[in-house]
View 1 (cartoon, helix red, strand yellow):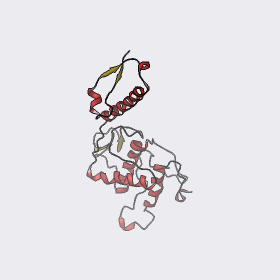
View 2 (spheres, protein in one colour):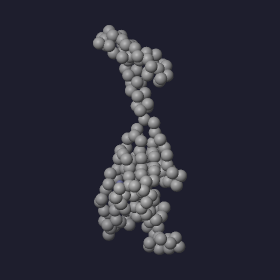
View 3 (cartoon, helix red, strand yellow):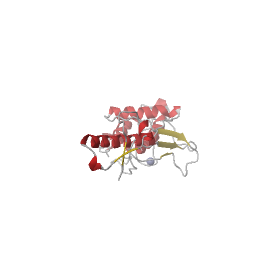
View 4 (cartoon, protein in one colour):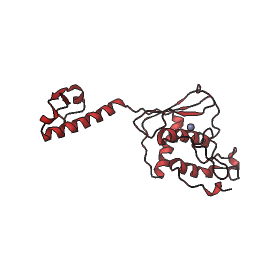
Length: 208
Ligand SMILES: [Zn+2]
């Protein structure tokens, strides 16, 4: 029986690809050789993973600030995310009345995440709705969150992960009205808290 072994563990990673060397059975190996074998296999596995995944970051300029805001809001709540594996693209051919899609609902970071935004439908009418749409998709793609259809006591969605509703904290239609009751931007704080922490209690404004 032959066991593949990488020699010259102190050489660069490329050496592992090219070097095919073999040593006899495990029981014939001394302790230092076994340790070397273990380290070598560990390193070789690491090399493989690195070689398989090349993250791509391609986000339209119009949407880049929302991704930065997502990272900043996470950081403000004690969660540090580095997002270098994200492609966001516009696509007018998404099936059905879908405003956005995430290709992989997972927290795993060694996967290329792709968010597709429907450019054909009128999916947002203000910055807050576009933000909620993107944060919902980022919630799927980077927090591994799935849809939640629970409601708050006042009937509002409990989460930004509620499907097909990105009008959760809109401003008034006309900015001049933003001091009046049509301004719901104060709800943003709760929805972002809940996005990063599902056990966030219902806010005072949601009481009946
Ligand atoms: Zn969704």
